[in-house]
Length: 56
Image 1: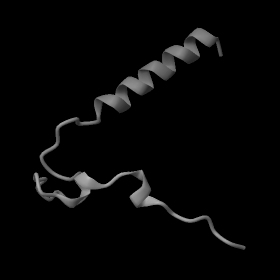
Image 2: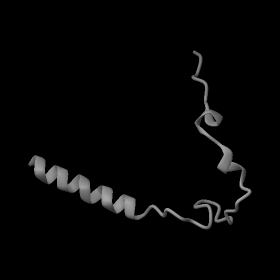
Image 3: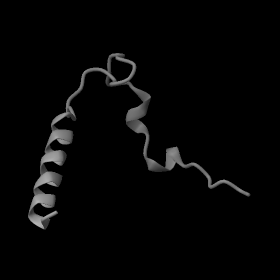
Image 4: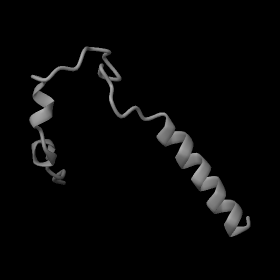
């Protein structure tokens, strides 16, 4: 495959995926529940989601 065609296909695929992302959603995508200013997830950061590595 020509590198230019590969790059073009990648850009088109990226544009399609990003077009599906809604920036200002009023509801959560999976549950459909209403978002609000008091939602506890707004105070989360990456350290709150730490998963320790598995021990063998």
